[in-house]
Length: 387
Image (cartoon, rainbow, N blue to C red; front, top):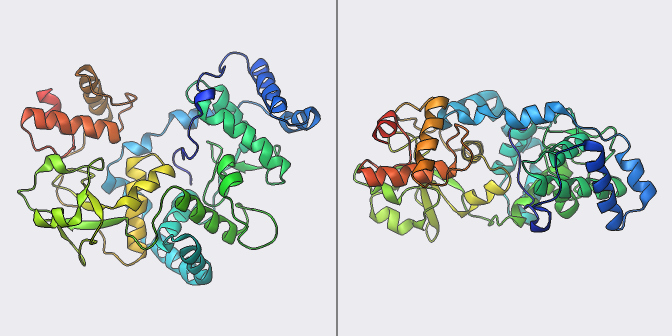
C-alpha cells in the first residue's frame, strides 16, 4: 500500500507559479492548451481528457498522512511482520534470476527492491484503486504542489500515447503512482524497463518490468553497486551527539575512533556514514551510508525510508534491532506546539503538521545544543518545557 508521495520528479521552476485552484473546467482548458502547444494533436488531447474529473477522496488522502506521526519503532513493527519476512524470502527464491539481473545490470541489492515491493503494494497484491488521471489532475489543480503534478499530467498523456496508460481505467495510488513499485508517469517514461521482453513496460502486471524499473530508478538517483545502506551500530555514552544526524557525515574510520562499533560485522571501510538516531540516543542506532540517502528520492518520509532500509537489511539476514528505552514521543499536539516554538525562534521546520521530519529534527538538535541538553535530535517534553 502506498503511504506517501514519492517525489521523484523535481518541480519545474517554469511551472512553479502555474495557475491552480478556481474553476476546474477553465483550469483543465489551460492544461489542454499547454498539451497542444507542446505538440500533441488536439483530437488526441480531447480524447485523453474526456473523462478527467477531480476526486475529493484524493485530497482527503493527501491531507491525512497521520501514520507518519508514529515513532520508528511503532512504524516498523506495524509494517514488518514474520509473514512479510517469509514472503520476501519466498519471492527472492522464486525470482532469483531476476534479482541477480537487477544486481548485475543496475547494482541494486535484492533486499531494497523486495522491501519497496512489500511496502508499496504488498508484493503487488494491492496497487491502489484511484483513477490515475483523476488523481493527477486533482493534485495538479490543487494549489499545494502544482509545479510537481502538472508535469505529471502531461507525462500521463505521453504515456497514454505510448500505450502505457488508459485514462478511463488505469488505477493506482492516490498520488498518481502506478504499478507494483508505484512509479509516477514521468518516471515510467524515463526509466521504465521492459524486463520480460514483450515490447512494453507493464508495471501493474509484470514482475520483471516492475523490479527492473525500480532498480533503474534507484541507479538513476545515485545508488552505488556493492555498497551498504544501513547498519545497526552500538554507541559509547560519551559520543558527541551534535555530530549525529542524517544531515552530517564522517568517514567510518572517524566514527570507529570515537568508539562507534557495528552490532554485527564491522563498519564499512572507506565510506562516509551518518549516525542515525530515529528516537534519540536511548533508542535504536544505525549507520546510514550514501545509498541510504538515495532512498529519499523514492519517498520523502524519514520514518518510511528508515523502516524500508531497515527491512531490507532484515531480508538480507540482519537481526531485529534493539529498541532500547527511548524517552516517550511527544503527542501530535505537543509536536505542533514544538514546531511553532522552533519556527518562532527562526528555524525552518516546514509545515506545522505534528510530524517529526528532517527539518524539525535539525531544528531540535540546534536548540538542544543551545540549551545544553544532549543534542540527539529527539524532542522530549523537557525540551518543549525549556522552550
